[in-house]
Length: 258
Image 1: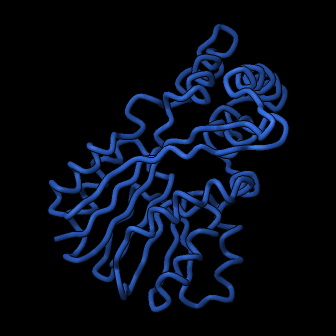
Image 2: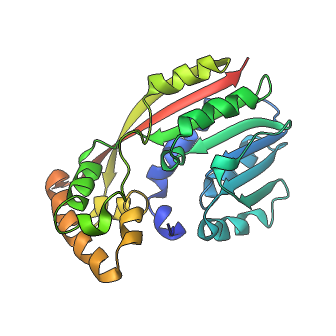
């Protein structure tokens, strides 16, 4: 699946907030190595060098397009680097003191088992912090899936969109962390985001959830799909005099290895 880094960071103020809320709960004082799994274009990874100026910060992502954007951030910061890699194959090493993964694990089938394995292998005192979207039942996603499963689009899009089991509940992640021998905290937040512009919810999902659909269709087909989908979104998320309110539920969990 091809990613568009510019589209991904278009709503930066909204997309960045969960990351900062997550990292703010990590109380590591002087980590040696901080790893950001699924770092995307690297703009948020770079902020970790300010949070922990004595740490080596490594961002890992499977998208070469995203990392081409990220590499420019590392040129003037010796402690920051990026690596191309599948986070499903990643394993913590002895120097890993903090692991952050923000809005990435929902793309990885079986990630709950992976999280348990990572926590099991982390050294005592290490921190692990994760955030995933919890809005798979919201209109933005339900309407997309419903349209993809319609007679017109199902021949092209059958099996393209994941839903069942894409993420767990806060209680699921809390249980995993406790079972792995950690002190843990899990919670959820719904941000009431006010978006502006024409078809702002469509523009939002173009950067993330709609990417698998766009990758599976030709340019002409994608335009037709978006036209139908946009009409549904306008009804589900009506514009107000202040903008379009887009509730955005996120699931967080933070653990410290005992």
